[in-house]
Image (tube, rainbow, N blue to C red; front, side):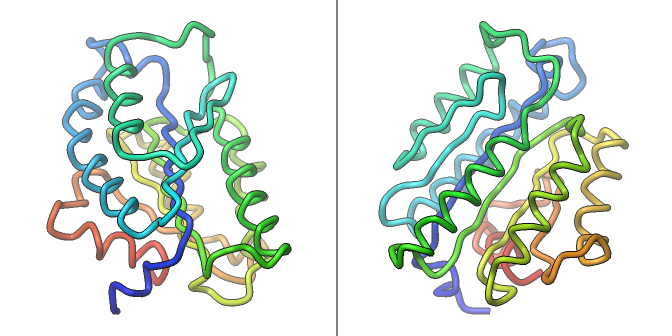
Length: 209
């Protein structure tokens, strides 16, 4: 599949990190640190394909959005999250809000005739969100608004090996159409499966897997 499939798209990266994993004693803390280089490489490639800059979200409470952003912003977020907790106590990952906003922004521009040919949304997380049914509903709704399978891709990257998180992602990856989606737009990976040499293939997989 040619890399030009990735051009002229909106790229969004959502960082959904649990509070517990920001403590050095947590089993996934080191994994977040180790994954940082791979995530930055991924963001660099997304930035190459997104002419007006990538959009970065922190799936926290409150949610933070960085529009027309870049790799430096993502690196700053990752570094900061390695050294401190948010000032607001986040007891659950707030993934539904940034997902809904990312889809809404894309479809609003498309309706106005100002959109690009598609979008790629990458979600990086280490813990299953609380409102899994609502998240699935948001993704199903987006899948039913697109014209073809390749228009939108949502890729989840799991940090750590939490089994409940893996089961949640596997269900999204394999059962989306059984939940009413017209297209299967979800792809899931562990972070260590994304090598520097295959970032482009990972992004293509987000669209065509």
